[in-house]
Length: 536
Image 1 (tube, rainbow, N blue to C red):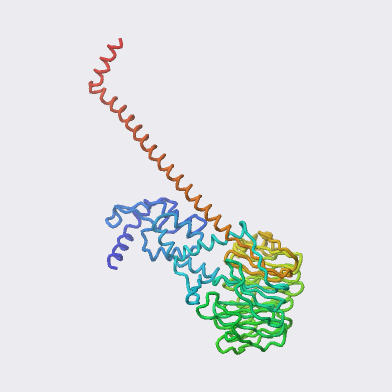
Image 2: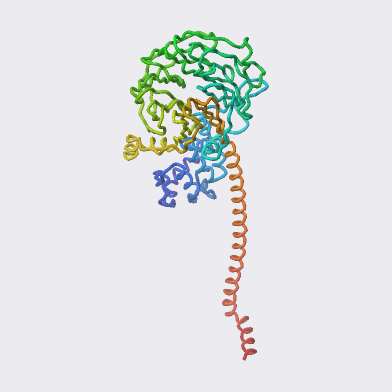
């Protein structure tokens, strides 16, 4: 510590001498940089060497940002986003190591997708994945998100006798749950697309299903919530035929239209115009949230609950049960579907008018970012996995929308009047991809694990599998890497050959100079004279 203080004092005393030797485009004392992003500042500072004075402390050293303490460099890197971190990591090995260990990767990953969970079949529990570091996890997940623009295969699941009203994809366990008008809950294996088990007839239309690694819930028109506990050691978690793991909850006086789970609570919405919040341990109703119309959809996230009731969207405080915000007349007609980002700051709504709206949520207010009219029929269901929003509609189509560009535009709108006008006028691109079903009225959709699952009026479940596009993209990346290595190898050989030819040229120039100088000594002059006589 004393050495660092003494060094700083010595540098301060010689600051005037050092500043005079520093180029004008890198002003150390005033910190003036003419770059558009932090990554360009870091790249430029590393690329340019700061000359040193004759002081003993600085003698023999070239100053750059990598000479700073690693903790200070890490604090600087915390100001960058993942894209800028990737640029900076290419500058030097030191920055590459520090950028890979930066906590920004974990923060952004959890904001977009939550914690990476994997299922241990032997224990029947879900735990955090610790096989890779956060940078590798982020790069892999970002890479996987591109596959939804690639090729796909369609798998068709037969088992329901009537229309399918609800689908749920439990990606951590690779399970799919479906139900509908035939009153039976079906459980499917996501990889093999085979039926694992089916429940007994529940005696009513099942309009909602939700699940996690410990609990499966289904709700229908009779007002009951049918529940199954996970069986320890069972690879597919739930035994739908075992009555000992089955129980019911009942307090709604109307059909149940939507269900959701979090680690401690169960959320249910009904046409009785209420949302009920249940405690998972005591199985008692903790709160009743009343609305002015039928509740069609709900999405809890963090400490808030978003609910679609009639043509309005309600936002509730989940802890106190108080109303925080109401988005009145969100659609022309009923709001049928809701989806939220993992942090809850983005809310997507789909309605009877065929439109999809995107809202940015605040503590007590909201602002519309964009709107799409992607369908000619009502939007029945929405699902979101960053950056893709997928919708299913009564027109028999599904729309895939990438929201990344809109988020960048919304950020620029805070400081740019032109971008603000574009956001206010809702000038957005159309959906990046439209997937066509094989019949009308696609009632339910879900997304995850490189797949899109959809069910509708025809009574079958279809899975759009994009894992083939993922494998193809991996092969393309491997081939691109091999070509890059070959290109670098060729450049290295060319550089070596160029350096050799350059040395040969330098030898010729040196020889010619030596011949001119030696001519004055008379040694080479006499030889040239002899050669001249011989020629004569």
